[in-house]
Image (cartoon, rainbow, N blue to C red):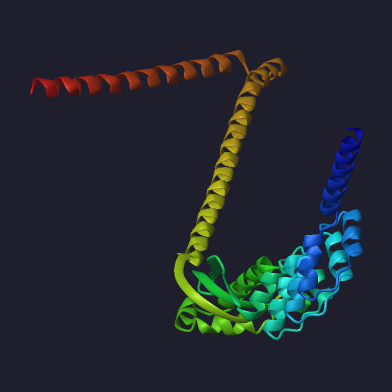
Length: 328
């Protein structure tokens, strides 16, 4: 009985060891690599496990590259994987470049991938150029008419400048700037409408793809719309501003005139306030007699009475005239 128990225990231990061995050592992957003619040692696969590298991420792309006739080794792929790169996409890009007869070494492809760009998409764009469309660019010609221009830019990826080169947004910004400059230098908007290819030729000759990750193949004007009359609007705004300035100056002159009038009235009141003092001084000095003073007072009173009678007479005549009209 004890012998049977010991045999069973040994058998279980053997099974456990085999399970752990086949789990830790990718024997199936090693067999696949050997069948494909890829020389990968079993201890290399174990070392990948110890370095926390997924063996399938290295061996399967290596099998793919070997079948494509490329000469890559395990160390290159593993180093790129440990650096955080996408090994499978880099190998696909190398195969696509080889089929398209594009010179792309592994180091360059790995650098493009580690720079955050899609290296496979870049290779595809090198073979099949991409068309990017600008939004409507507002430009004003010398005659003050606004033109809304939309362009289609055909670009091809430049693999040599993908690392450190500017992207599509830079291309669109430079093309928009070239459109604004070209339209702005035109004497009339009609010239641009008659020959829209002028914009393409001028903008394309500026070398807008310098320092970018793309090569501009062509710039085609897709649409031109006539916008606002900016010149007329500016003249209207200028006239309105001039009117407001003139009104402000006129109001300033009116305020100064009112202030001057008030100042003169104050001077008159001040002068009239000096009359009693002057009369008192004249009486004291004997330059004005009592009778002269009373005569002056009588004249003043007579003048006031005449003014009162005159104003009363006018009111009576007005009332009488109204009565006559009503009587009729």
